[in-house]
Length: 592
Image (cartoon, rainbow, N blue to C red; front, side):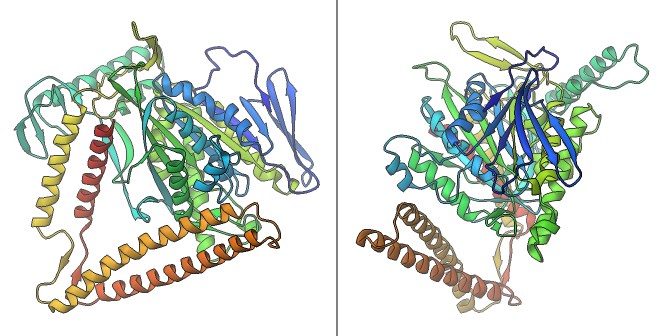
């Protein structure tokens, strides 16, 4: 382990913290070496093919080896203090395929089980990665934790806690605090007990005037700062202030409450079992999608206080970049690799644009960069990137590319923010200089937030009912035979039941495999019995997966029958996701 101890001035103190984790080498020769220097850890990569050497010394920490506790202490533990200080925190693992990203974030396959929790006897299991360790430490802070898991597969988001149900990416807008008056949303005008904060999308006169004033103030400030310059160019921070109203987020994902280590294990195991993966020449279990885990934390402002403050933690396990010539993938896996490389290329473009304060940042070019926007440009975000590299000589070129990406991250200029101390509380709180007061998307939970969310939920349910009344929902043709309609409904219910059985079978198999991890050669009667249980559980899982596929095929054929079934329109699905999203946020606040 090496730490960058070089003194930093305010001009070089980057908001994005970049660490490097070097996987243990698998070959005889290594291309990566780490040395101490006056500037901090010096990472040198020697390419034996081109006989070129390149060095990097801009990283805060360099962690070598497979010790998960050491990696957590140096990479992720500082995020806990940032979380307490009022920042929304992000930890993102980046690197080529087989460099150890998923191992760093979650741990090796099959380690996150209830059995491993029992075997640890109150301690954190040694193999657990950064995510479960972070959540366990947060649970010790008198907090309420909810989490959701999203998979970005071929640039489309899916809910990993709901059998990969498709999600949509929308724009979150903060509500405006403009005082009383009526609220106008989607043409409906009504008086409401909104405590002076109008919901997003309100087009009343007060909101219109407030937005107009904010736009005018932003332009005026930009013009004042551009005096003496050859061209009017708003500064990055002023552009950020203009963009604060709009933040991208998925709509409708499932939130799961985490209270114990067992809950964390089941959550991570469900993510691992649902996420898309495939084996190839470089990795036996290569993730074919980006995984984003959103952790919503409700903390007490002070010990014994009634008021809860909300914090957000985002854990990102990116899919690995790969060279198709090396991985040898074909068909669907080749298409997956192309999609992964494309989204990572867009991420690289965004980072380069931020590092040179480019006027246009191409966040909208991919779903991944839209969802990472807040982590990269929000003044209230504290972000850490872990650059995972493989030290083997065969991967020297890929290692250089990964370290170059990390070097570009360190060049991203600091985002304007200040830290103030609450009088009498003894707690430091990050604040930002923006002209919008948010009651819906700020980190501090305000007293009237639940009322506003309930109003929005009621409005969303009204829109859903109107869409269903217009015939935009799922429908069965009234002219179809009743028997066929009844059989289709029964099969749809059977599919849901079979999906639940498959999930339970996966949990059972993972737990039994964890129990047999320390089994010997099978000569012991107890070990032999456990191995037989694993084989039986595997057979049950395969049988249930086969049964599920059969029912899914039957339902697909029935739904294709003409004049029998019509799926819901996209507008109806959007309304459904919005209702689920708001209901989950209401439940989360009520649980806090």
